Image (cartoon, rainbow, N blue to C red):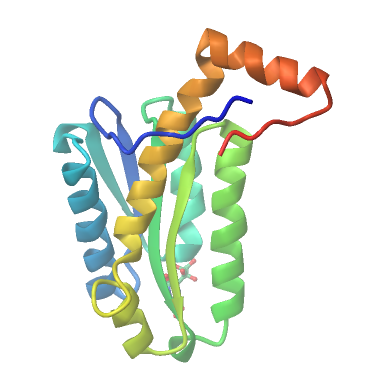
Length: 175
Ligand code: INI
């Protein structure tokens, strides 16, 4: 059995961070968390580019452009959607989620989901750096892991193993 795991080493990797400005104080906290994570995992701020967009609804569009540019190993998507603040909460949250997963699916560039969905401002605060941690930090960590895992698919030996597993009808465990 071959098992693949992306390491948590951000050195030498380039990241785009796309962040929705709506609920900006919280979004800024997510961004700070993501940048802190990349720094702690050995990344360089020179390899990080941040793109602000109006709100979470626009995050997938900019994330897709970033992924298609070929300049990044992964795209980190951040935003804050609060139910109390909008009647179209569900629409915005659903579009952000499906749009971000489409980025990874259609481009092959990992795109991590750091969109906080919360019922109240208090819940949002908890997920943006208070009691429940920082979802920006978590999304950055997932992006680092996925960026490294991607290499298993381009590495010669890893590729052969994946092909063999597929031929045997076993998709293989690449977690
Ligand atoms: N965008 C968010 O990121 N969070 C929200 O809570 C929110 N609310 O409440 O409406 C929000 N709306 C803006 C939306 O993302 C778009 O920017 C806007 O509809 C223009 O396309």
